[in-house]
Image 1 (tube, helix red, strand yellow):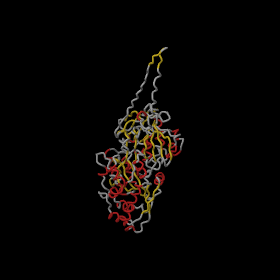
Image 2: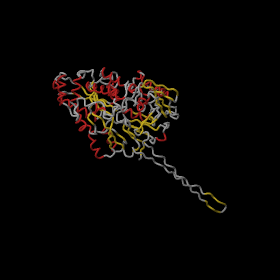
Image 3: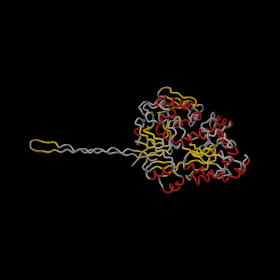
Amino acid sequence: MFKKSLAFLLVLVLALGLLAGCGGTTEQPAAETPAEEPAAEKVLVWNIGSSGPKTIDPGLNAASDGGNVINNMFEGLMREVDGKLEPAMAESYTVSDDNLVYTFKIRPDVKWSDGQPVTAKDFEYAWARVLDPATASEYSWIFDEASVDSFKAIDDMTFEVTLKVPTDYFLGLTAFYTFFPVREDAVAKGADGAWAFDPAASVVNGPFKLESYTQGDKMILVKNENYWQAEKVKLDKIEGLLIDDQSTALTAYEAKEIDIIDDMPTAEIPRLMAEDPTFMVFPQDAVYYFSFNTKVAPLDNVKVRQALAYAVDRKAIVETVTKAGQMPAHSMIPGTDYDAEGNVFNVKSGFHGFKEDGTADVEKAKALLAEAGYPDGAGFPAFELLYNTSEGHKAIAEAIQEMWKQNLGINVTLANQEWAVFQDTRTNHDFQIARGGWIGDYSDPMTYLGMFIEGSPMNYGEWVSKDYDAAIAASKSLTGSERFEQLYIADKILMEEMPVMPVYYYTNPVMVQDYVTDWELTTRSTWFFGFADVMK
């Protein structure tokens, strides 16, 4: 993103005249200096793109909309800026010779939004809170993926983390919201993350703080004057709109009532690509998929799951439905992740029985369904495909519904729920087939494979494979090629058992008005407006 700055010139003109006359000299009053006009308030209007995040508590969040808000209100030990990791709350860090012990020195000048200092003890509390079963954090499992063995505040300014095994991606995870600090007395003001939505209770350490929140309408963030880089924060306010209708958001954007959107109607994408220079498409380390509830018949039958997966024409979906440069998915791991020898992981792992061009393998799918006891769909029970409310998700669900009817002779009903409700339904395993999407939390296949071990809150379909869990566990005690050998084994098991059905690898279409500068979309596809400007 390009960066600009404005220099303001203030000219002060004083006029002084002398008047001579009988009886002495009289000084003429100085001309009045025109009052300086106050600088216009800089406001960024950004559509968060949902009816409202389920939570903006860093320790409880498990969704991208909440993560985008959190990334602008809180800050971790490190932060990604211009695609590179930089020290943030940590002024510096050292790593032991065996690459197991990280020692972070907290900046002496960092403060919470109420002026109290940020300390190493805030990190110790926040991390311990996520791992406490009573917190019920949906992301507690990520500490295991990060190979964290222990952590402690040595003193107010020193935070020490010990890993189980050397883990290259650990440092990057300290810039991820689950590892952000929260303050104990703030959390105590509202159970289940309610404190974070309450401006009177919310205490943050990032560039913006919460001024107000109206569910289903908007979230107002204002500049945090106690942020350690407050002098770099140009925006006075962010209006985070909660519009989940793509057409409504696009209409407002084209009327310049919204400055940034990242979810637009798929039918409009060809026009936007051709006509609107503010429309951009970025690559994304992410996969769109559906989860099968493996505890519910007939989805407890692996052949049924395979039949459903092979009957989907992914090529048709990306070319005629999504239309934003997405690629058909043949595994849960996008082509952005590499193994220890530099191989693209999902190329070396193969196509797992899917056709290389992404089209449906109807013959294979029909044969599997017949083997499962449902020739040509005969006797197949009615079932439901669930997605969160969105024109785009609806279009994909409808396309898959038609493919299953035409290719397998089975009928599926569609159902949708608002985002917050949908998340609870999926987490509670109260579905048959449910839409899913995953953006990698770090650049490694484990960010995808780690979700499906037994007991993981992201294992929505409650799939269990002892062999899979063993391969994942073995990978965590190994490094280099030996580690990836276990990850390849896990990937093969996952795609043979098919508890999830990958559909496509995301791209990231966004629209940003040309008067907005210095915005950032991180390599994890998370917005950061800490140094953004609105040049109207």
